[in-house]
Image: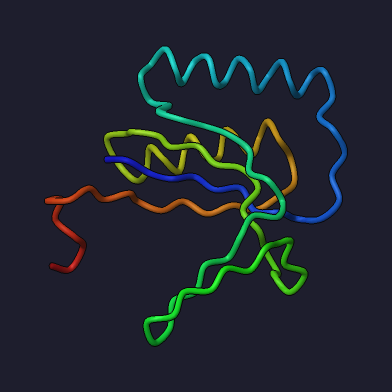
Length: 116
């Protein structure tokens, strides 16, 4: 099962200190060696919003001040269960400290959808 773990912006945060960088590096290395971590990265604060309505596609450049929560980072992981994904997320937050995030299962074409 694949999951997308997203970190949402929770306000002002300074650059990570050396201890945090070391702990996060070890966590990422451990997940990579175990074959759990498929991809990870930070996201630019602005981006572009794409809207399609009535056959017309519009593009609006960010940043979007009206957004209450913005995704600022992600990790794509592969685990045996949702519970395992949640445990990995808990470990992440124990390293990082305060913040918020979202975990969503990622489906591929042909995967059974929940409730289907």
